Image 1 (tube, helix red, strand yellow):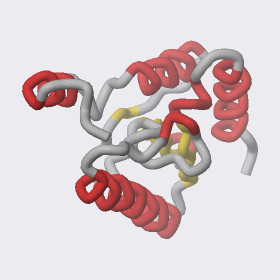
Image 2 (tube, helix red, strand yellow):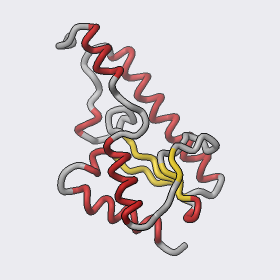
Image 3 (cartoon, one colour):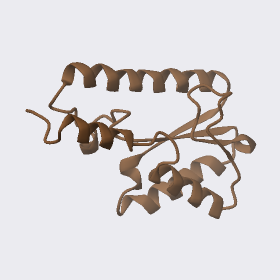
Image 4 (tube, helix red, strand yellow):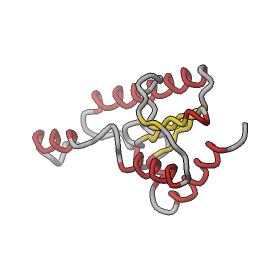
Length: 140
């Protein structure tokens, strides 16, 4: 199967995809802030550069894009039909890097939470955010 866009159009589309401050990430940050939680974002000192760092709770949150982090059994994480020699290793490497960062953070005694893009869509959004808040604020 070939791409429906020209190389130039595809290149432009891909250049507009952000790695930071994505819509799902901003939605999570706004929700947590509205609940009175204060945090840092994209801490370079921690493995994997977590999207949200709640030092008070020793908790880090990764807001994962289903496609880019190859969310298993998710309809938004379909392997592209074209150029699979490029995409499959790339997406699997992203997932491996995530797992490595999560293990490193857990060794450092951080609570690691991953919330997926698909959990922030439609009817799931409110319950996912409430669950996230509960995980963060639960007594240890």
